[in-house]
Length: 602
Image 1 (cartoon, rainbow, N blue to C red):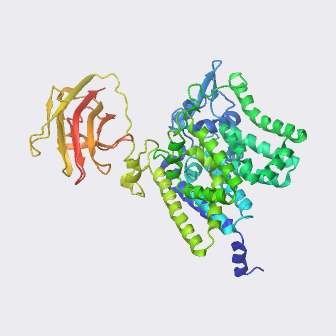
Image 2: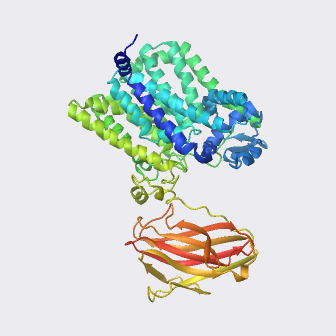
Image 3: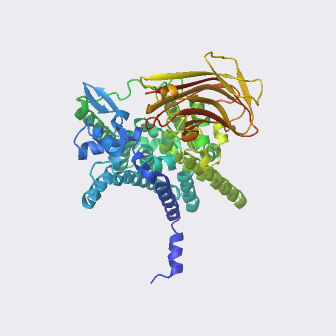
């Protein structure tokens, strides 16, 4: 019988077990705390993820590759018509613009969710909680499986505890965490897993130089391309994985033999052909352009922005990659062929990624296409730690890496809790919310929803003149003129009334469209100015709408055009007055001008 001591000694032999325990624990916490809370599980499939996932319910449940079933589901789950995110038209028929590789990767988990739904009496519709949870589990499985392959491969060359630690930091300290646990329906977690498999199979093929190993590598490359076509550039990493010129030549001689090359090409094209078959079933064409108005601009890549910008730069949003680049420098010194090969591969990859028309891939947390290639940073970071030949240097670097990973984890948490917006980040905003996790920062940097005013029944527009003669006198006076040059300086604290509008001429109505236009000038992003629109009855506030005077494109020390609008329903004769108030924090001044307040009955 195994003693307790022997049991723990056996556990210590497998450092990656700790990686699994930590990563699964953190993933479970995020799922329960953020992704599955208050019905947010319905948003697991959203944006690009709608198209990546849609093949599965379309084929296995509805047998409808025109995706008409989403018209019914939009009412059932109140998430709108998801097909609008991915449908294109050819031959007067619809087709899915996204490649099907992600759906193929998720398919085993989807089928398991279908079986569970059947035996538990749940709806078999592809979008119930069980199906969304299956997508979460699928993403976690592929990423952790990929990390395990990286551990197995690189623990042969580096200390296995170091490799396990680096794998843990890559998962928790980069945007891999968000695109694995929170945005599980996107392609990146599955690309991550299959690129890890490609690296592992490539190393085995390089070592064995056998016909079967090259064919297996080609099959994996086909799956990598079927998930995200541009990721086929991972083939350029072969020289880096070979390590020297002689090994590369020897492997290449095996790979180009007809008995190896021909079946490898057949395997690769057979996988890609799956997409052609689906296109033909959808719209009658063997190939279709899913991005007719969206292109790569290879003559003007945004490589600097891709790596260094505050909007989506790799180094700022996955800061542990900084250590990877430091490891690359060491690699170039110690093994020039390997270091230069990696640089060429990553430079070409960066050129392609940053040449997309929206180089920042708007609607993103960090540079999300780079999530797929983060496995390559594992050996770079391991080599950096291995290079430190003194214990105190290794210890210092590991502590530094732990601190950087904690920063990366905090960035992920900020994104999941809506402190970091999905787009429009700037230098000022990055440092304004840096390491801040309090609930008071949620949505502060988000651009508000702006509905367009429907055809009104009655409309009342107030152009406001600022009274700057005295801070003690009334701030504003309703006026028929629009005084563009008048401004007011306000550095007070608390609420200040801007305007009161009686609703005598609009009384008896139930729905109001409200719009505010103004210009604001801040000296610092740390201003906490807020606008309140208060609907009152008999002097009591019945309902209040709050807007932050910070927009995603806000810039300090210049005038910013702001517009807020919303529609609100009330019972007849319930509201008799609307009030606009301003609240500003202490010590930091704000300037306002060109205020226009519009109230319309609908």
